[in-house]
Image (cartoon, rainbow, N blue to C red; front, side):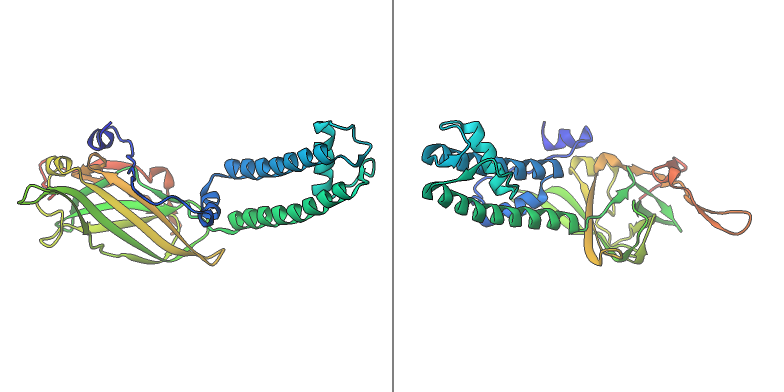
Length: 293
């Protein structure tokens, strides 16, 4: 599936990189931090069992472990687990210099492996992540007589994101006069690109004025140029006091023209404000005869 076909189908595309340098040992820590929890726990368990298997082979080769059948890998493996886990049932114990040397080496390896696993698990638990939600579509419709691109985003958690900033970039394919394909990136100025606190809903507005990169564009031209919107939000999590970020993208077919998002904020009879998140993604069409841009 080509990039254009993927966009029309609503799927995301991937950028394949060739010619890049290979990851080094220093990169493994960052790779594991980005893995899902199930894979991280699987990697830790695999490393632990693999280390015990290596030392079990050493015990089988050297012997010298009391109450362990000579040549039995299973019993040597269980003795290795007891040693590395500092369990020490007492039924099996080293009685030769070679076996005692392996126990010392395994104790050191166990300390290092435990320290690495503890640090990795703690780092993953303590790393603050954002849970932002974006509307399914962006819309373009008039606001105070000015065609305006808009979409909504919100924090899916009950905490606040302090001093949140948003950046929106328009990416489209262009052909230069020399006939070269060029992927142009243009920043879209936002009417309010900073929020003191971001909670459940924030409507982002970009007026399409004479200086806007979207001026003169139509649904057809955006589709022909394989246009997409890239959004990045950065803010400070008030619970962890750490910076969090999120990103999202809208393809040309996800931008609805002559539409607006349904209002989610209303006032009750007793004067309270009601935020209805059931309508977060809802849109409504405008007058089809009214130009959007």
